[in-house]
Figure 1 (cartoon, rainbow, N blue to C red):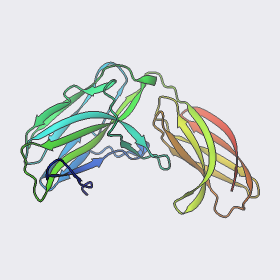
Figure 2: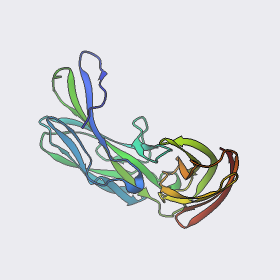
Figure 3: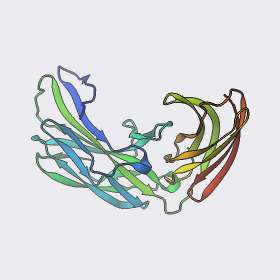
Length: 265
């Protein structure tokens, strides 16, 4: 495990955070138990994901284990996802806080070395759209530990929270098409925004006509509600330069969308 880049605090101590994010592309995220480790042990949480149909009240729990040799001051927060448009991977936005909608019933506590504690999550009010997909940030800070070589190990681990809607409403907003350089080659991309309330994967096909012709199959991606991702319609390598027309057929759950765009390569 690599340590995050250190930053200087007030005084002489330097903070190093050891952590693992369990984000990744949500449709293929690894559900193994997240863990943050340093030389003297670590912090883990199980299960990796809390999933429930949206309702007010208690919706699930995690178990946090402290395998370090120190008592840790724990802080639990629910954070919105930030999603990368080009590959769909997600990470927790550590500046955001979803506490108006869902909270840990015990958001702060001390956890002795070698012990574990269960933490229950509670929905305070129904999120907009009736669903919520977010990260659970578990942060541990040792008590009364002197810095060694200017380093104080601290621990951050990210789990997943999935509040699925009672009434599913998959919906997309189809944006513009463009040609971008991606992984060493030019590809045709289509921007789509998830304006529904589900995590249904989005895929489809692209039919390109112009100076050259090509049909492409779109590898499915899973946009988080409210987020934009770039669907790769086709590689443009080997095609002639000029003005093109492309017909997209996009699928999300049981919904199908058709869009025609023009572009120049």
